[in-house]
Image 1 (spheres, one colour):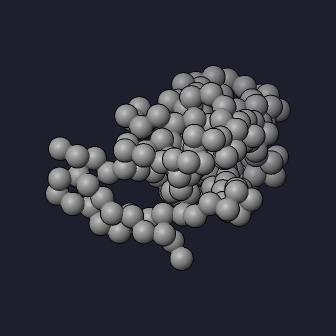
Image 2 (cartoon, rainbow, N blue to C red):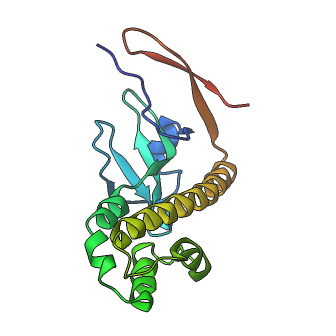
Length: 181
């Protein structure tokens, strides 16, 4: 069975083979573990920019590569292991911990809004806190996606790259792509 040339989540900004081989694209950072057969690498400049998403370059199956915005599950794993820990913190300690976990990509105003009305004396405090942290995560991810989209648009413009979209997927796994207008 064949495979489509590109594996991407949100964007497929094409880096053709000739540009890939000469390094005419943003510098690559460490390998991004995405559990795919298509290797991905963080774009070095943006490697520590986000806490919920990542801008990566993923090699194609047959040829070329594409710049994409993918979910970075590292924070999701850390947060799911921290529910009990968060429930034991004072309010100020909780703000500090959340700021740390979100790599500074969260404002105190956002935290206050989501944590409003939570009381440690409530029987369901821990579950309400987990729900609030999930809601913060979603809001941070939405904000980061907007920022990442703008950065990918800038990369596309700065490097004169074009974006592809999949227009057909065949039963044997092959796919056709066309340029985004």
